[in-house]
Length: 72
Image 1 (cartoon, rainbow, N blue to C red):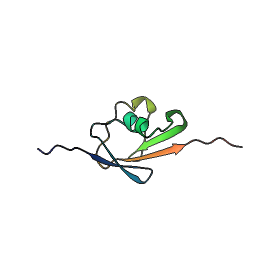
Image 2: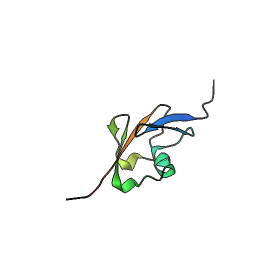
Image 3: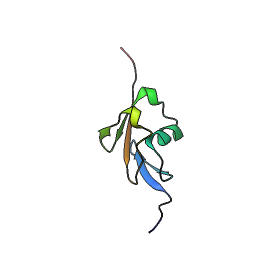
Image 4: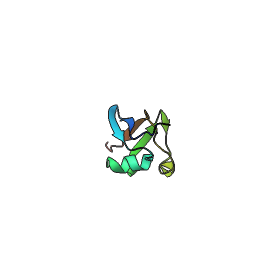
């Protein structure tokens, strides 16, 4: 069986390569995304932030991150 040594993902439409077995929390930390001010969608499903450490990122996953901006 062939061992996967890199995982290709998309974040907001841009391609990235990460290490295998990273969690969604690992990805957010790696790219310095402010967790408290964003909504996170993984493969068109909104993610509960309490589950970030439980979700393993797989090859070709698509992550969308929306930042909240205040205003009047």
